[in-house]
Image (cartoon, rainbow, N blue to C red; front, side, top):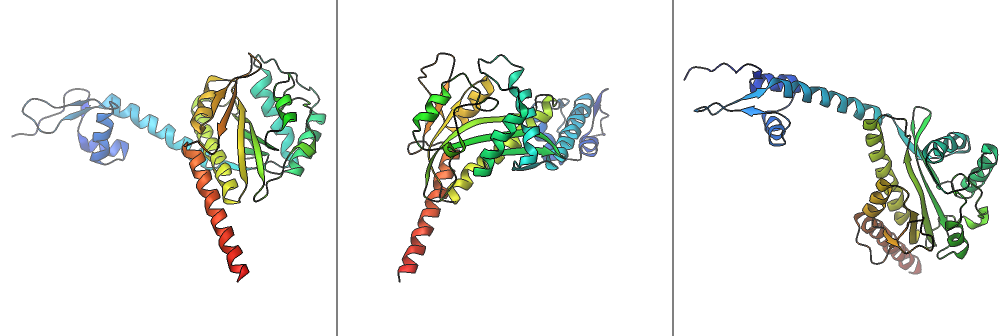
Length: 294
């Protein structure tokens, strides 16, 4: 059977492979997902591919690879005192431009002093995602005593914990120590809003992944998480909390949606990984105790 020429606007598999730099199997995958239209003329085994779809996909893949390269150059670290001004600026961008009922402190110097005292007590409260020297994302987690009545009161007040002056002192912030129970307040996971949508998505995924690593790492170090609390302020934030395994509880304030998690009963992937890491730490600790007792 003579070789058939592609219809107008269509190209052969070999050309698709050259344009996309992928295997025939990957081409079939793109076809099955509807990314590339595949035309098989009657009586033929092999078909042709719509060139415009192929070119469009090539552009998308190039953008994706560029985003991958850019996000790989970012770094996730604990915040230092020199990071605090940029951290506060990012939080102002994240929160104060929206409608919130919270009371904010406009004095950046006073806020900086508060956060520097807190991270001096526990350097792992704030983590920042940096692109070069710019802070483009952050996670903030406050460890307090389990069932702290003082913190419960603060949580229901109008004062912003991140950008205000809540009734919390350095003494109310707990340090992470093996065997020591703590309650975690997940204050934020945020990406710079002014980044374009694709970058926010990529950096956001990296930030969430790194945050999950920090929770699992606490288990590896023997830190006992008694409970995790959070306030759901946005639809995407609420979905993320639910993904972590947190459930909404009745709040005394109708304008505040509070989420919490039962660490013992939760079967969420994140909490299961944390509990497994904690069990391994505790088992290793007991083994060392037995060895020392011999």
